[in-house]
Length: 333
Image (cartoon, rainbow, N blue to C red; front, side):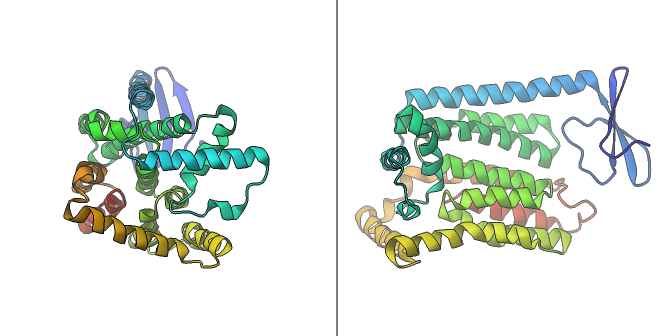
């Protein structure tokens, strides 16, 4: 007897048996069968064309972002601060005297620590950071396509969303910068994509990575369990523990480095006071479009009533809009 998920190739078709409640993917076509089991008949030629579509999308996004990383300068001076951290930690790795307390600073450490590992052999901190950001930029373009296609069930609208992000000058510019804006957005989008599949554990892991990149992602500690409870009337304690780990670990690092677990927040508050005093009311004008670029796409997709995150609960459309709306707030910092 065939098991759910088993593939059988018959002539030019692939027959897939899966639970009827499972979401139809981009590759699904005709549905046959009744009851709790359903058979999706997938034309092999159609599957190949969809595979080529994914390859074209990924190749295009990767080529544009890596080319931008090679040619364009850093969008802001913060990128050079990250490059200094990457170079310093790479040197500490090579010398063998890296300490956990060295992670403490004004910026959260995940992005520079990941870039510092390959930079130990490459030896160009700025270039490594820009390439890492470019890779995240390419992945975020593909994730926008996948999320939009999932919500709208339209490849055309998904291609439009992909084209908007791909051709956005600010997205290109910040994908070429040794900064955390694009990696943070990429991880949040990955968490959103997993939440759409109701893979809460994986969504929590991506959210935890995002929490290690930017403090704005700490809002996901409340968001993800809330979404899971609204749709499944339960909360995974393991997923919650994963979400809580990065902030708690950061408080411990603050205690090791400064003797105060809240020293990070004191430094940020002092910096924001000085920044506001220097820039005044015009402080956000130079980044308005970028700060809202990722969020408005998620808002647009979340407004589509055909989103099928919770089959059989379409009488709660506000859940869809609320969940995706709160996710979009993580992309607006």
